[in-house]
Length: 157
Ligand code: DQA
Image (tube, rainbow, N blue to C red; front, side, top):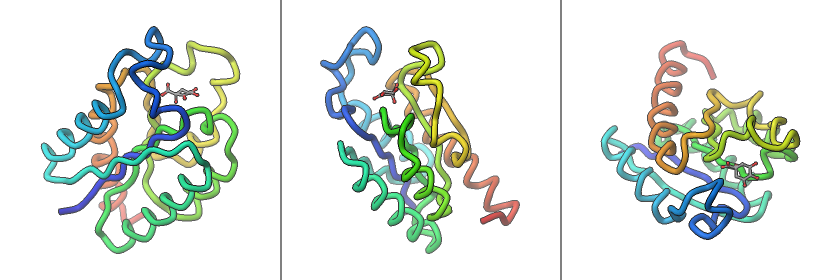
């Protein structure tokens, strides 16, 4: 069974207690269950990981690039948290690993502080989604499958 990788970055382990007015009351475990169910509906398996460390995210993206090239993985749903707005290293990792990425944010970052309007992920993502809450991860998994299959059909790297 092919996998989709769901990566959550800094502070997303605090979901449920962190700013519930912004992020809701569901937890990271709920996110992972939602992703696994969405993947299963598509005949896939979701692998869900969270880290507070930029380098760990980069290593996982490199690994995803290898697995995608081997045909074992569809791509990555990535919520890089605040690293979205700062990390050129993550931008380079996605580009370098040539991995299909759907960028996801629980909140509508464009309706928030101006420092959240800039994303280093968006220019190298296949699609960008935000503001659909925790349940929106299911839509992001579906979107990833859609963009990755469109990419495979067009024969692009
Ligand atoms: C977030 C938005 C980011 O600006 C913030 O730093 C996060 C979460 C979101 O899911 O809405 O940590 O990525």
